[in-house]
Amino acid sequence: MKYIPKEIQENVNISKVSPIKELVILLGSILGIVLFIYISLGFAIDIVAQKMPPNMEKQLGKIYVRNFGLKETRTPEEANLQELLDRLKARLPGEEKEFQIHLMKVKEANALALPGGHVIVTEGLIKKVDSENELAMILAHELGHFANRDHLKGIGRGLVLTVFSIAVLGKDNPASVFLKDMVARTEMKFSQRQEKQADEFGIHLLAKAYGHCAGAIDFFEKLQKEQKHGKLAHFFSTHPSPEDRVKNLNKIIKENNYMIGTKTPLRTRLD
Amino acid sequence: MEMLEAILQNINVATILVLFTLGYIAGTIAEKVHYKSIKQREKDLLNLPAITSKELVDREKIKNAALVDGSVVISQDYFKRFLASLRNIFGGEIASYETLLDRGRREAILRMKEEAKKLGATMIINMRVETSSIGMRAKGSIGSIEVYAYGTAVEIHP
Image (cartoon, rainbow over all chains, first blue to last red):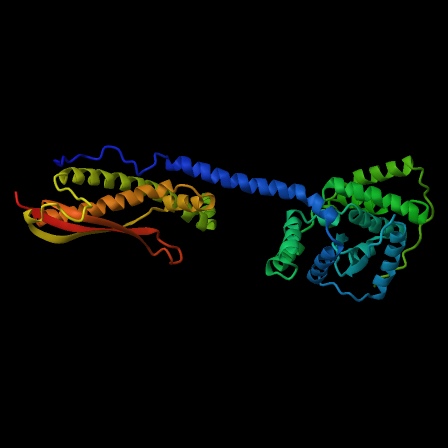
């Protein structure tokens, strides 16, 4: 056999794939997967918020209480407010949940519904309201958030990850602890629709508790006036415009023939 | 000015993008130049065959024999390394590494042949090629390989 040297014509060891094309396909796939997970988490929020076990919510609530620097013990003012909240709670249909009120030393008027049944009201809010009915409407609005599970939905996609992590890895796993902490630091986001629903829940509860709806729109009218003066209060930054809220509440009062009685003076006094 | 500020603020992202583009352009040019040289030298050395058989049939014909070897260390560019890391997620052929290995092997064999030619060899028998990765365990590995080709250069009586 005679050896005849030949030049390599075609190289079979190298695929004919354009690297740019490969990059586009690979990056596209990753983006697609990330987008898919993000969207699925969005859909899962509602389900998770609805089905979250109470003990899991309690754990989360504890972290919120710690992060906000709240105490388990009650001041006399808080005991007073708690009594009002309990009175409203008694009118809730089939509700066994415990709600706990916390008074925060903050100047801005604000109220919050947190996981674990914690309701936060600020001193600024107590100073701003003039009657018990006015405050009761705000508390009833917060109870509306609890009834609609907004206090969990508002956390967003992080909630799904946290619940998943607690369920799979356990509550003391570092990943779960980290997620719980992160979630408790993110600001709650409620949509305008959720606020409207909470308003509607609130006014019906107010009517049940007092037999009339006096003071229901007082707070929102105050906000409306402030807004006209160009001063934006923190309370309604994520809320529908106070004007619309007053209109909507008045409409409900009219439709249900709710009475307007005499207002009860506020018992909680702050110096 | 605003543009400059934006770049400075995202210096990490900017660095990666620069390396990425630089890697792609420099890598493509280097590869083309290298292949051109490989093809030319392969042509020049066509008459010095390298085979993998251990022995020639006619031992008596061998006038002289010596060990020859060729080694090359070659690195991947930033762009292709990134492509390969993406492949790590999905699996499949790492096409971007194929040229690296092909170039490495051919270059190592060429260097071995060039050495054999200096010795006045007629052919190389019992050729072996070995590949190993370098610095793969180190953090931020540089993703380079060493290809080592060796064989026995023989001079045969005409």
